[in-house]
Length: 364
Ligand SMILES: Nc1ncnc2c1ncn2[C@@H]1O[C@H](COP(=O)(O)OP(=O)(O)OP(=O)(O)O)[C@@H](O)[C@H]1O
Ligand SMILES: [Mg+2]
Image (cartoon, rainbow, N blue to C red; front, side, top):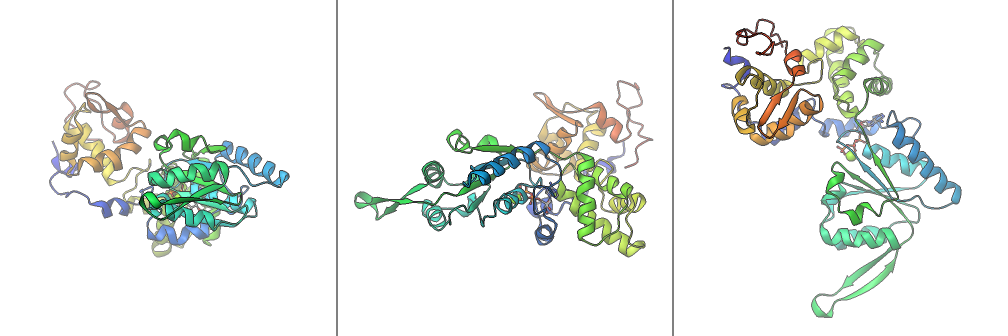
């Protein structure tokens, strides 16, 4: 058995920073934040994909505009990088309303929220990112604000404290969460519309890529876009990030035009494979297949085999492997699917008895 392939003896546990350094990380890094503003679609028409959410939202907003009213509160749920922040800005733009942006973790005390709410203009959009991470008292204040456009401002402390009711102008709350299931039902129920953002189809990511290429003044052909889209894990943020790395390669090593071959070679340099798996994902799969015959194997054992923390394997690598149908979590442990064997070019032992140790086809 070739132990080097597992990387077991050379790798050290990743820390938090390393996770964010991954080219296929769904969260935004510093560079993303800098370019995302420029790449964000500004209207519903420009927003690619998410047909259902787009259509429903279009109705909600148009109806509100026709009534001359403020739009209902909107909850957007979905994985990181699928366009929740983008959509919140589009909502404000479509309503010709200003937008105020804050987040659950930024609101430590109910007083912080009261200050924001009481300074809103009529019709303003309040974007509350990571709404599931708001403190409890702030959450309760938000219930009343959403429903009755009113807050009770507490003045003083202890027995002498008094609540002064304060009327708020009608506003539209747009809440975003990656974990809709974590929202308490009373909060969820106060949204007039909930949009569930799905992962994007490859064809949709191709449209995102063509659009971004145009904005970044890059030349990319259809096959180049398809190649990058296929490796982007259904996520526009990752597609845009891979596009920038392929651009670097194209500018340094080629004539700047991005085609299939350039995209393939560039992303091989960055160790993002044809299905969007990176080094860590493949190390996990490889250990599962080669060391444990495809499982079942316990998470801790698997983590030790790849030289990673348990949490890193569970939270960083596994979700995508599960989503891709390459790995299954079972009560007895982690199990590889037939697709996992195929993806790494290996033959499952039961299909070829006695040949499990010969990984001649293994290439990645
Ligand atoms: N439907 C889309 N069409 C075109 N580009 C998109 C679309 N959705 C997202 N993007 C691009 O992807 C990037 C990330 O989107 P956004 O910041 O809105 O994601 P998010 O859901 O708010 O992520 P997070 O959960 O990390 O806050 C943006 O730069 C945006 O340009
Ligand atoms: Mg966001």
